[in-house]
Length: 307
Image (cartoon, one colour):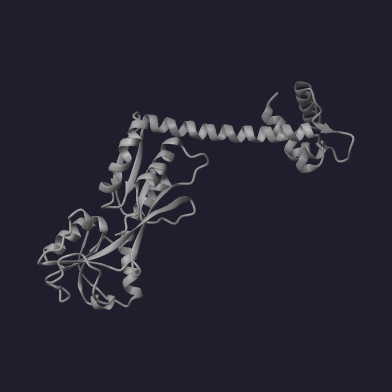
């Protein structure tokens, strides 16, 4: 006797209000359903159907068994999903992605403890734009992403911190102030940037998209002199007087963009502009333990990055 059949027949009896209608809905004979239920009653030693009422209905024991069989099926499906997930990792890898330049900040905080827990799991760490991360998360080619927000109904996103935006002003700009040798807040109105030469990050970068919307909202028209792959390059070019650049606090805090006699480093006030950083992963029923650990380690180790 198959518990799956018993569950299927009991469900059909409840839905259709009787054995005859249940048989028609399932395209089986009434005697077949009756015999299957009778065998189950013999096996469990209780009556599963109250046959003294019309329409026939489940007894308390019948409802109890049906609820249990549903839970058992759900748990088994979860187990299979978990085992398939672990099997994949055991023979493959977990791909962790983040926006540049966050990788050098986040990965060293997460990887050592993760590898102590799962030494048999290979990890691959990559930096890529948010739009690419979203596509790869949906296809399963990326398992876990730390970076700017991704709002997709098929993905789970959780904000973990916010980050300030800094503008690098080279001496070649009319906004340069030689008396500013530390990173203060931007001393001008945002409109003062109108017409300035800037170094843009690649257009598929969500960071650049946030900046573009910010300046459009403030009616600021910037002159893009060149487009580069990441903030590190933008900062280096700003130092070389190519144009202004907008970078995260990590670029500033890790000495990639220190104020000099030829470069101002100004923080855009947080009340005007800041960027969110979070974790994104696929929605699944029964989160695998390795991915759950990565999520927990992110929450534990990534403090608010706003300066």
